[in-house]
Image (cartoon, rainbow, N blue to C red; front, side, top):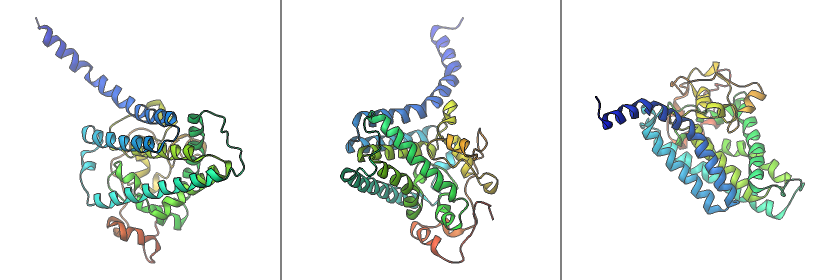
Length: 301
């Protein structure tokens, strides 16, 4: 007859897969809604915004090592230095843009139709919707308009997906992606703390969207563009999988007919037709403006 200790051990290992599945399902909502709640309560305090983004990045970094989708994606592919430069550069660009928009919004209400009477958290959610629709529009155009694709291609060439290279975007494309949403928010009269908080939520979500973590979106994948959806957008079978353009809200793809397959995407990611894009940050920044480079586009040609 087994002892109590042996009986407990058998029970623990029997429920361990269920605990792992539960943890995989709770990870995204815990981090995303936890960050959203903190930012809502802080009402745009810069210190809290910085702490939320940094804390989310640290948590995702740890979880990538503990529960990776692919252990190979945690290895340096000769791209780590460039990815870190992209991270620092693009976060600097986005935060500078948010600061400047905040200065302008403090001095002008433009159309003055923004619902400032709503609770702060609801204003952040509304700003997030407006900004994300702009991101979707520019991203989708970047897969069909040649010169936009040349700027955007840099994001697709890595042969692994992890949270750091979620920021691998040409600095010009970084500005272009954010401009429509920021301009609309500014014209409507949204205030700086609301806009800064919405941008912080985009950053937190993108950490999770590109995370090399074996988590599940569950029913939330119908609302949020979680990692299991976004990996379809990055797979190497590129010409056949144009879609899943949404940055934060997955329902844009369903609404505009660009939703791709569900389930686990192949782990073969990246595209190979332009060797320059496997090189350093400086050459990648210059590549879109050079003649004779790859003209591959959404058609995969």
